[in-house]
Image (cartoon, rainbow, N blue to C red):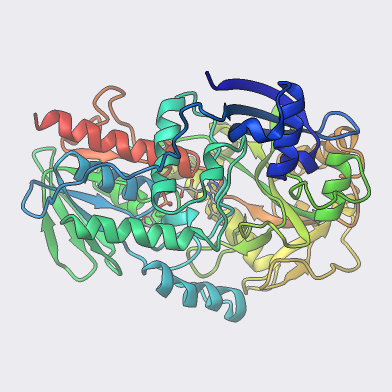
Length: 519
Ligand code: FAD
């Protein structure tokens, strides 16, 4: 019988198949030659002690024991070109995984995406980084693959539904992601690998009879007697179907405005807001691994930190080891930060959103905007930051210790944020209570992670697109909008996901719910 074993080894042993076999042979008292194969089921880093260890869960197959390499395959898809049509607005993880699931269920998805395909998108990313030009339909948030395409591709989620998570991870592997994502405790894919995976998903949708329309912005939703009839695009074209998955993400402000104008029920929801902090990766490694040099077998260290400050949660968000800060505005006249990393996470800087949870009462001065109050509050901060930093894609920046001491930084070194920075006292960007919590919070962070609070760390503002400021309410059982039949609010923009994996799971669930109604 193959043996399953939990063990802790040095990073060097974990990284080398021969050393691992040798180690295991001693543990189970057989010669290394008798070990036919070792499958790693789980891998995580234990950095609590000075000597860092790797936790492994393995299965050991001895010679003669049945072992077969398993290849993860795609589900069996059938041609849906003449099947019932379902409109999917948005080709982010929610929309794409909804489309794949619809095909699996024998329904035809028509995916409508305002942005360009992953390749075409690159030119617009260059334009925002280099020329400070924001294309309102093609940017870091909009375009094929959605907001997650040019990201760190972190694939961990707080979802407790492990079966759903595994299914999405396996689909990603079947579409070309490394099998390591099934094993790592904190899997990620990386900006350089994600676009090819997204492209392959789109090709599969088309191969099996689905449709994918790029450069097509939905400007209206056709509704009659509280039932969906279809959509209208920016060119006035109508596409009709009575089932619509609305997966437009948290940055599609025009969609929230459209729903509000049409009196389709939406509501303001709390979200989080703050800054993006950048340290040298070397410093984060030395703090997290308690060493001067992390060596060749450990990955660039991530960090995750949460504190209660003045009764509010302040926490790290979307931390990118070995990553770069990206300009994520979706309209001219605003600045927004977020982060990405290549698959090797080999850049010299580490960045993370550091955000504070907001409450509905924090934007009560925007109450006249009703359900859009949070969105308008978010927008006002992004626009103020744009103005303070010089009305380009440069962002306000401040050294971390200077910020805690309310001091404008005398200089800001070059950071990974390509459009550049302007030295600004962050207190000017945020309302007083938020700046105060951030100031206190960074001092607290410095106590938990010695060395974190340093003037070498640079804060960039704002980190404002952490989650949707609006919820599009739906029935918790059927996933259908509470008021409009045939409308399925989906993914992060509707308030039902908070990352790539949870958005993909939500997309699949919406597709399943639609199939249920058609049985
Ligand atoms: P989105 O991905 O936002 O997709 C919505 C799509 O709808 C977009 O493609 C948009 O163009 C389209 N759309 C909008 N309006 C219209 C319209 N009117 N007509 C037609 N199409 C429209 N999450 C992680 O889990 N891990 C990470 O490492 C990570 N890093 C990130 C890094 C960056 C730079 C950014 C911006 C986000 C990152 N995220 C990360 C968050 C993650 O990308 C989102 O949670 C996820 O993409 C949400 O999926 P979604 O499908 O719900 O929406």
